[in-house]
Image (cartoon, rainbow, N blue to C red; front, side, top):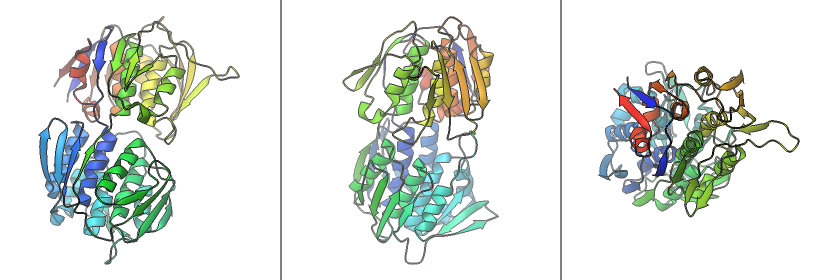
Length: 440
């Protein structure tokens, strides 16, 4: 198992460019199964989760060509249906959260698809009910296969049928999965309470290039005009957006290390409320074209509510604040001036990593699995170095940010969790002046 050894207390300087968005890349790569033609995708992050999904596509029979760093061509002219129905396929899917996105396109194209319990972060229960109910709404039937410990979804003999549906929650991956299944359904599908994150919008734009008409892109009411069981034959190209979670992580690193940093090519209009959320923590940001400049600050003061009460920062469906940044913002708050309540609504175990921060000297009250009160030190008391283990991707990067600001040498184990979501993070941060060593 690999670990990071971090010598904290060093300032960062220079510029850094975020990688392509992991969550978008997983969706658009899965969508290549909906056409027999070539699909070119650029700005693909070369991280563990994405690489594992690409490897799974190769095993399915997709011809994948790496044209250069972050540039791939996918051609799903032929699919190995025997492998897709095998124990080996189910086992591999169970270890990869992103594999859930293959269910919709495989069900639409082959008429059958296994739905194993997906792997990924250990952050509490993550329901897949929205995905399955969406497939059932489109006419699929479902049975449990006890030998493979997975659900088998089967489309009717004449294919999936378009319908109107109201999602029980605005699930991003659930919405993406249903869109892809509806793309080859007979008739029109209306999806209400659909997630409308930029990454879902990007998926819809790729599908329109592949010949699938979709109305209402960027809204929570999507209308998908299915191709009627006809696998697409239209070639397409696509560029993945910058990862907004990396952008937020770099803002946090600059603040915690009191450094001056420029974050390049961030696709600012697609960041939504993220810049304003950091400003509420007292962090100054300047938009310079499509870049963000973070000046060095000795102090940053948390805003209070209009009535003087403690501010709450909570996650919410887009255009609200993404839950993937709450761990990072919690770490930043430990060195703010003032107090803040962090409310993680969507995942019940994501705040348990704060025990590591408390050991480092942070003042945090964990109220319950969803809420934590942070009393900022205003840099009057530096965090202390610590030996830690990364429980998930976002907590891992949050602990790395804390270690960069702490005096002394910290060790973070289980960093394959960080590798799942951040490309060559130690090399990119070392170029900014950080002292990080990977030990395998």
